[in-house]
Image 1 (cartoon, rainbow, N blue to C red):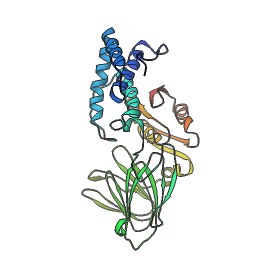
Image 2 (cartoon, rainbow, N blue to C red):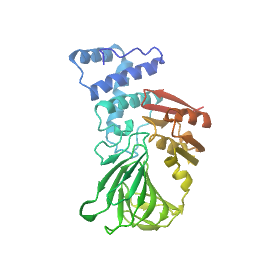
Image 3 (cartoon, one colour):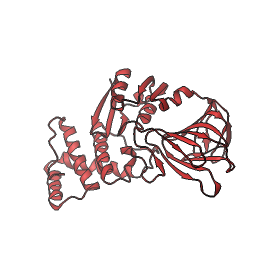
Image 4 (cartoon, rainbow, N blue to C red):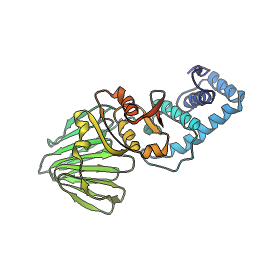
Length: 319
């Protein structure tokens, strides 16, 4: 980064200040500023009270954000548009250099996982017992087959398991919110912000949470979280598994859920900037073979508008 932020002539004045503040903040947090750059930052802060205010807001918001566990909701302060955009840009840039506290903003997979996919990648892996797992984009697994065990940890993302019978006993999948076991069969697990969705397509599977043990038969689904499992329902398998054939199918789905799933298939984070819009239930089909057009297809189909701030932050607004 040079001693001065790049020109921001194309941005409105308030957004230009936020943009500059976010770049200085990113350098300070994730880079190694030189003495000249530190002096230039001090001069920029002293040049205008709005500069100090914008930078201070980023510091406050970053302190709140750094305390969040990835995927975990928290009571955050109400954000104005400028403050939110500034935080989003700064966090995304810092994620590239600092890595740890901002992984949830950059959409990066867990680098140390045994098996993982990049954003937008689909992959099939064969496990030591002959079972297979189809992995959606931005999915990470750890595998433990030591001492006759058949154990997998789904760290994040979505995976379709085809379990073969074995003398090694039941196949176990541990998720952030509970464990799924099966002797054989096929099922899909999707880790979302606050829960996991299990859909069984063949044979049976069991869910074990902190205080419940439930068995699901073929064609059934269940959403579970810490210590709680929802009702067992009919599984819309064609919709749930459409990603395996290159499509995303949503029917009567909150837009917030749609954008969360899109983040497995395209780089960056997507934020819906209106709560009523975020909870709006939508139906659409998207083509995973053209990830660069996913946002364009969404905005066209739903009559909403998108604004992009760097390649890593997209904001969705009502039309």
